[in-house]
Image (cartoon, rainbow, N blue to C red):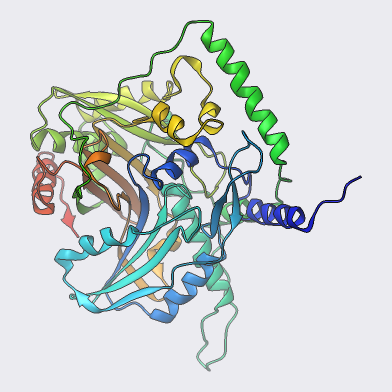
Amino acid sequence: MRRPSARNRLDVADRLDVADRLGGSDRLSVVDEIFLRTHRGLGTPIALQGLWRTADRIDPQLLQQVHTALSAGPLGRRVIRPRVPGARLSWRPNTRAYPLAITEQPISTATLLDWADSQGADLDPESGPGWRLSATALDDGGSLVSLTCSHAIADGRALALAVDAALRRRATTNPPASDDGSATQSTAPQSHQASTAPLADHATSEPGAFRPDATDSAVIAALSTNPVAPESDWSDALRQWSIVLRGTARALRNGIPQRPVTAAAGRSRTGSSHAPTHSVILQCPVSDWDQAAAAQGGTANSLFIWLVANMLWASGFPHAAIDASLPVDTRDEPRVDNDLAMTEITVDRADTPATIREKSRIAYERRMSSPAGIPEELLQVIPDRWAYALSKGAGERDILCSNIGTLPASLRTLGPHHCTGVAARAIHPGLTANRLPRTRLSGYLCRIADDYILSLVSLDSTHIESAATLGNLARKTTAQLHLPSTLW
């Protein structure tokens, strides 16, 4: 029998390491590859970002410890192309990372999101690094910390899991000093229980509503479970081609499927000039948000969708109906990857949080899928430009409402620093006019302790020309429901 070369033995070891970090497959999914293509200029560039705001100056040594822990965690990986046509791309560990960047000169709190928007540049999940940790001092005496990563590496829920794991690793390897100056044994809390006031009606599997947080032990187990032995490129290619050929043959028996129309009327599609985005973040007490939702017969999640849709109408959106894209968490266990599906609803001007709740329940049963039953694996065996042409605009609607869920309790503090706010969102580094999506307004909702945090990103500078305009729209829309909120 031919013995494997040193190069092949290294590949197997690397893949086992990746599978051990991820608690599952070392291969990229169809969704992973869609986001990967955006880094090559094929689609709207997207990066995920977590933001921590503290009332005092953050300790640089503490952040360096978190940076080291992140480097050794599931975000520390990059994409490797297979040697066999049709085999899926795979992940390999990558300890190379951007150095921790700290801006000591305080910036104005009025411009903190402008600074945050700039932290997504030059992320590369192929050659690496695909993530960045940075912080800046604020002129109110506090700090803002940003963790940004390529969407090919993780979705919003996965980013929170990765940070949770890094904070535990940092707490274990860097125990706090005792009163006499000696190190004390540090152990992670046994459980971060999900809130008794969940973000959405989990019992009804409402779209966009992620499952409640798993216990800490489950998170640790999922990130360090015994890895699945990696499949060879030949075996993976055979499996992929088998799925594609048989599935396509079945679909073509019903005729050649038509590609769905996804382009939006009136959106610019030419030119390479910079396309500005505008952002605001609102913070609202959980008790007030839940009370407003209950008064309308809805849930926290359906109120969220109603707010984003009505902000778009208030900006001058001319149509009587708004199509909303709703990401849905598909995890059966905590994993750091893109484990999501998409569904959609149409919101009418007469809709309330109650009617949106009912529409969402129905939508959960009909996830978006490939047209006419063509297997989605087709996108992984054909050239990138063909795959982009077939999937262009997939999941894009007038608004995006991404409910990230209740964040792990570990994210409420960074060492001794209490966080006055924690937000999660997506940003669009390097967005140009010819890469504008159909989406005009994106909303990202999460819960941390006793607050909901709503992050809004406008991609329609024609109707929303500044962050101040977006902030005014948010204030007016929340005021309709007497919902108190504070802008970051």
